[in-house]
Length: 171
Image (cartoon, rainbow, N blue to C red; front, top):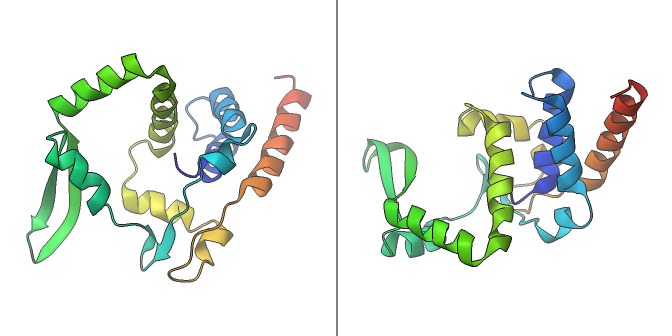
């Protein structure tokens, strides 16, 4: 959601390798993601840390947690060996989200993008998704503690080629 170019590139990869549930949908969504200035205005760079992209979630999640909108649970042997953190949207969070959808229809953008992210991620784990990102040279070569750069122009060229191939194949 915060890096439309990387999301579009994975849609294209799935369209090319046949793993997309619907190739035409994947191409259409990549076109939407890369159309206009969305990659610039929606991009929210992350820092390369020890095991990939990272940012502290404490501040953002503290607000949601303090208002009873989410719960956070450690999985593993706390506090010694936490394997992962699971985040749950609570009923109050769902109710507030529904209210916001009614009061601010422009927020539907987030629902649309979340649906794309979910379709791309499928049943893969966070570690599996991180491994996909490391296949991007720009991501993999980012030095520790630096912002991960965008790949918009390269992905737009790839999308252009795929669109031309699709048009040439009659569909």
